[in-house]
Amino acid sequence: MTSLLVVGMPNSGKSTFIAALRHLLVANEVPIDLCLAELSESEGHLNRLENTWLDCEVIERTKPATEGWVELKVQDKNTLALLTLRIPDLRGEAFEQPACIGQCETDLFDALSEANGILLFTNADREDDSLLIDDLADIFGADDLDDAHGDVEPLAAEDAEKSFNPEEMPEEVKLVEFLQIANRRPLASRRRKIAIIVSAWDVVAANERNEGVTAAEWIETRRPMLAQFIAANSDLWESRVYGVSAQGGKLPRDKTALQKVRRPSERIQIIGHGAEEHDLSAPLRWMLPIAN
Image (tube, rainbow, N blue to C red; front, side, top):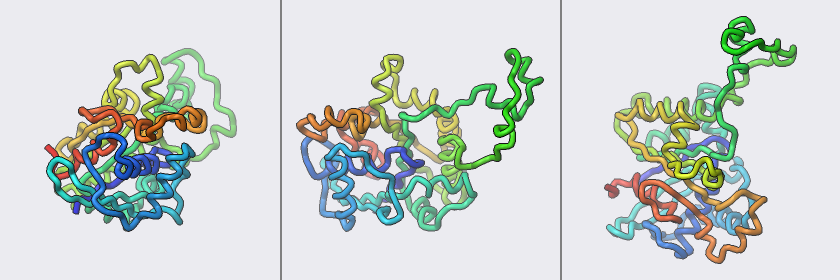
């Protein structure tokens, strides 16, 4: 059995990706590399996700009552190999725990141990994790920062007294800390594949300054800590980066335009490593043992 683990912080696009992938597999509206082999035991959960996606509604964050282990039984169209994709659809908070409280749920750790590959999500439609030098004033003090650029206003009393909250750490810090667990023995006994998914890629593509920018280049400039971590651990991770817009636009702003798309599958966009325009199965198939 091939096991692929979906990893991402809250609101990183995991559930939307699963919903769109589900539709691609059952609708046969556009060419993709994989096809559905049989119905899943998670049909109810998958149907709810797909219907919300089809209605161009915002998919709610995964809740305790709805989270589960999504299984997609698929067949590779080229080799006819039958494969089972086990994709945990878990709350984003579950992936924050290693960085925030230094612990990891047993089920998640076991899934990480069994996983042959990881889909790691980061949302492009959120503020960068970068800091300004003024943000460090409470660490270095105004005198030290004067040498960097002019005078620095003293911190307000409420800011100076604010305690550290690990949940407010930058997204990529949490992602790297999660991957640190996967790098420890006995989990680090083999080299695995990791597909980094930059979700909400439509936001990146709509910015004229990003014309011609690849998903890999975006990661290097906007998530440099994550990019450097993966590069420094190339003996443990074989990586690829994809830009994905599983919804096709921003909701609810673009709902009317998205509903006018005759084939919902054509709302989906993916770029990177020769993936066909709407084929979300490309990163999955790359991580399967049969892939070159």
